[in-house]
Length: 293
Image (cartoon, rainbow, N blue to C red):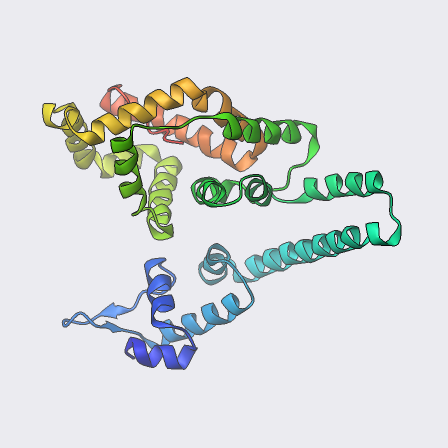
């Protein structure tokens, strides 16, 4: 089937199908003339995707349902939705309480307790509305789908918010323009590919470095070239590294994020092991640590 036929069969837009294909949720064959040819299996997957999206399941959950343990993923999604519905009911009750003569101090204490149950991501979006919060959740979102529980995590969350609120990441106008241009390519599909590569490296650093040794050596040689060191890209990398040092990004923000998110802490531990393997194989060239986050 061609994509227009699939749109009709599944009730999806062409752009939606293209997005799901870019996310790897469906992989249609490509004919010699460049048209995508959707099999019956592809159409079946898209019908399931369309249904799950109608139920507001995010793409990451849909991938787990289709490619992993579907029953377990659906149970986890249902449990999360129940928590959200319960929390919404509690918020509604608190919203009505003042009109019914409720004590504001008591309501505030209940609201504090309710907020502590919310995921890190929701709380960050509330603390930083707009593009800044969206960027944070795009960059770190896969580590933030956890509640803030206990005093240690609560203190870590406060440290993260305080750092982000005070940090000045200003760049010279020309470098900011270059960063904005690069960021324009950082869509969800790009981030997904980047995370997939990092996860592959963390899972088995030696095997990953062996497979990509040729391209890594070529990249290291490029970085040492005079042409690259005279380029705006080099200046941007140097400026970002300086800002990280000066703002405390590496010494304050990332350690606080590790205390806040157990999954991020495990990820960083894996990156540290990968970095050690990298230095054993390729030496320790300037600014070439694998730990980019």
